[in-house]
Length: 174
Image (tube, rainbow, N blue to C red; front, side):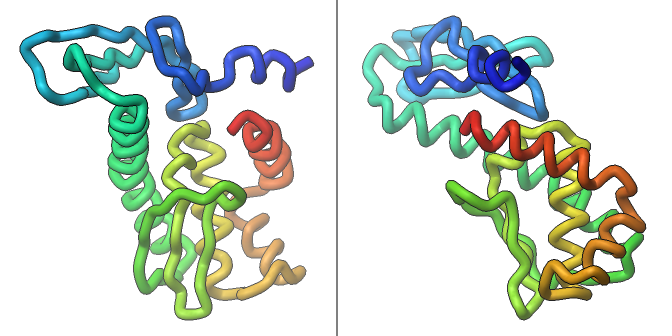
């Protein structure tokens, strides 16, 4: 039932007034505004909706790129400080933090301790983002999913298994 509910509010690929976009674990209403005096697409997010202003003529690719840039900027703004905070708590130091798009990963940690996050992570709730951050930072100490790795994750996030299940539900939406 929950999955069906989430599917009913999933992101609409054709963005128009009434569409929904996810941000920080919630689905928000999209209001499209055409402005004949502008040449660029802009996004204004309030706590209740996305207001997207467009020129008279624009392409779906342009609109998609602006939305992707919004997600990337917000991910960097929120996830870098969260990673810094948890790195101090966990006494680890990532070599580098980057953001990219991935169809099948929320994050990764290289053998040289470079952490890369999927910027669509910003669509998830803050508690799920926090889980991914802790998970990737744990890979700095343990490069696999060994018992020691999961002990470290559990030490910092007792309910990590619940978080994993919630992430799996969201994965079906995107």
